[in-house]
Length: 71
Image 1: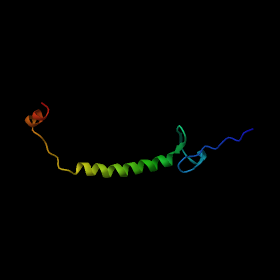
Image 2: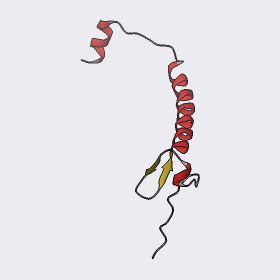
Image 3: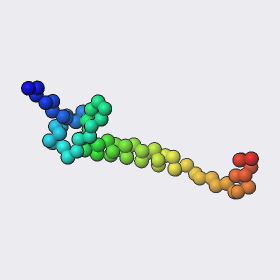
Image 4: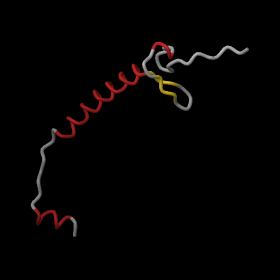
């Protein structure tokens, strides 16, 4: 009888029994803890980018000026 391979998170190595959720992908698995950490990293990275984009002054065009651009 073959010993069944233990399913582990491909990122941190936790066993399935050590996690709340273990999501299967095409070639690996990811646990809820690693998903939360990745989500925090994405939030930190995108927050910095958003603030850079919206710190520039906003120029509003008048309707006549908008019409000139799109004719």
